[in-house]
Length: 277
Image 1 (cartoon, rainbow, N blue to C red):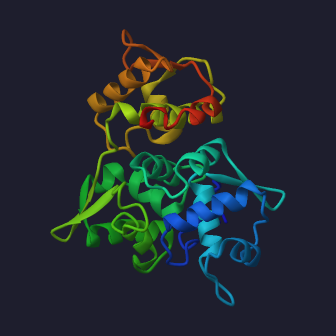
Image 2: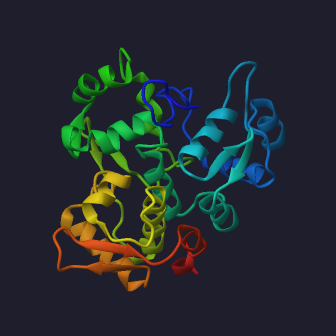
């Protein structure tokens, strides 16, 4: 599952076998994980109906997408729902909500255990590529990094955000006049709990739960501004929205701002869709 090129747990550049994540199959995989199904291609295919062939297919790529999106994890060769995955299964298992797609996207780009191409393009390459770039510039920069002769392996990274069966509603990157342009994560109060859960989970992973964390540390922990595309002002607006939910306290007297999370990520995931009721 993980790439051998780095010490992280990021998925290798070709884990998807050219398949994009499809909403209906992600939902089926979550249901399978709810029953603690084994991480096995044929077992997944038989139980979910996700297509597979003699030696490949969409079953394992779908499972791997779900792990990188922090929807499931693998324990003792079995798939287990995460708190995020359980809430999605109960509330939005067909991934219809933009919120669901955006949070899954943020995890997919994670430095520690996301997917290699997504991390490079949306986090590591943010300052290098900018918010708008050509395919040629992308290939010249990323191919030596991921060990590829061309950018064919990147196809699903872009196609999924324009396909209505995938993450079109998120639309994290779009093509305009032959160039790729990033889209900012929505600055919307209905997303505040989701962002808070994402940030709190990152804080917990770094053993800083309940402690003061600077905005710059949040960037280090989870790409707070890089992946989302937010400016400093945007990120401050989002923190204010989260604070208004009673989830974070924010010290604005310091530069950079200091935040302290007041809830566990598990409790926040249960509230993910509370503003959609």
